Structures are given as structure tokens and as C-alpha cells.
Image 1 (tube, rainbow, N blue to C red):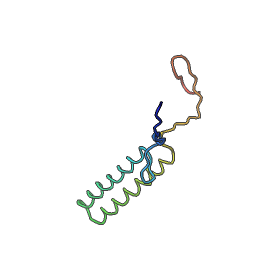
Image 2: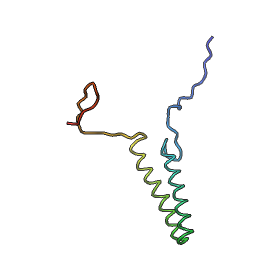
Image 3: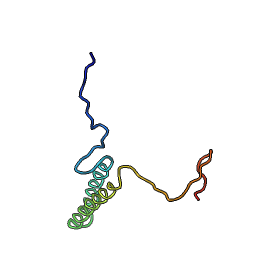
Image 4: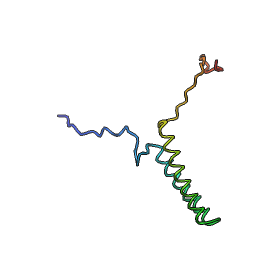
Length: 95
């Protein structure tokens, strides 16, 4: 007799963490780290309050940019309005 095992059906879904999906999780982490680095550098070189503003600006701006880019989808989509003529050697100039 063949045994039946439960199959987890969510394996083909992208990883989701705090509303960010797939590659955008790494973009969010990168914006957090960039904010910390640039904020710390500004705090040590110029002023503590300016460094705090830089830190908040980088983190908030990076996360907002990441959220805006995520709305476009997980994969880059190039949509052209041009017509390409294909021959057996590949694409020619657009018409």
C-alpha cells in the first residue's frame, strides 16, 4: 500500500517578513544598516543631533522607497511600446 504524507503547499510562495516579500526583505535590511552607518558617522564627525536626523531620514526614506518599489512586483517588468521584427538571427532595430 502506498503511504500518503501531508504536503506543505506554501513552498512556492515568497518569504514574507513584516510586510516585505522576497528580495525586498534584503532591501529593508540594507536601508536599516545604511542608516545606522551614516547616522553613526555623522554623529562622530559633525553633531549628535544631526546624526540622529540623518539616521531617521535614511531608515525612513529607505523603507518607504522599498515599500514603493515592492508595489511594482517582485520581478522587474520592462514593457515596451515598440514593435520588434524578429528574424532567425535575433532582434533587429525597433520600428
